[in-house]
Amino acid sequence: MDITVSPAEKTVSPPTDEYNPLIDDHGLSKQYETPLPEPITSFAALKDRIRHHYELASDYYYSLWGEHVHHGYFLEPPDTKERAQIRLIDLLLERAKLEKGSTVLDVGCGIGGTSRYLAKQLDCNVTGLTISGKQVEMALKLTLEQSPGHKAKVSDGGSISFGTGSVQFIELDAERLGHWPTPPTGIVHCFHCIWISEAMSHLPDKELFFRNAFRLLESDGKLVVADWFKTEGLTDAQFETDIKPIEDGMLLPPLCTQSEYVRLAEKAGLKVFSEPLDISQNVSKTWDISWSLIQSPALWAFAFSQGRDAIAFLQAFRAMRRGYANGTFCYAVMVFQKPMPGVGFPGEDKEDDHKSREKKN
Image (cartoon, rainbow, N blue to C red; front, side, top):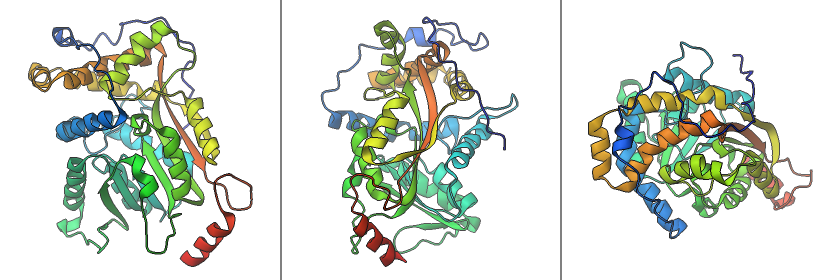
């Protein structure tokens, strides 16, 4: 597959509300103005709001986007959203050079679409993590439904045979990775790959996540990242107009730039395996489609009944489109790697790592 793309234009344009004229919101967004942003009293409170959001909205996400709850990577005009979503996974796989049969930790796994894809297509053994118990239930249900004859084999450890790989799903706050897993052997370097797609932007302490990822990766293992970012060098006006409504509606702590992820990864001891690639121009159509799919008066009325976070979420669809159009908001993929022992990287006891690998073999 040809994955060559042109990086999105870096020039930041003046704010604009001119989008695809074929998409008409019929004034719905103007009927339901978003109340003033609710202050984040603590990151724990923000996580509770995120958890509540996914408990409430996961069924809707599934009806809207299917099992893959992430952007689509559109390369050709006939691409459907479903095809584009698979293209995004394939792009990440190509850039990560992930080997068949890898053990994968899928952080922010949603309802398990990517986990199942990796298990079926690459024979991977995947552990999916989500902050939402509702999403764990949905992921398990969909996995069993998609298993041949609905007779999936479930191991004592809770993993389900899927294709020639396996999946399991666990409810866990990603920032608790430092306390998990704790096997009897004490060996924690247990994943060939940590996959995090559009989830790190939700984490308040991204530096902690990179440290935990370093701890949980095998030497030479990969951290595969796809995420949303603010553009470098925004003015205060651009931030207030374009970025703040996205952070508010999508329940995000402050958005980072791409260079900040690289800095945090390198500080944790990881090295860049695949440089950040801006694919904003190829994914922005995701929000044109999404905006057209939410033009239902009943949906907006229901969101209004659920409180300001639900309305802010729908209004954020418009903000995402505006941010992409103005070049103030962007989307990028990147891959980091944990160096092999002996190359001199921080935070790791090389002798202990060698012993852990010997014990595994």
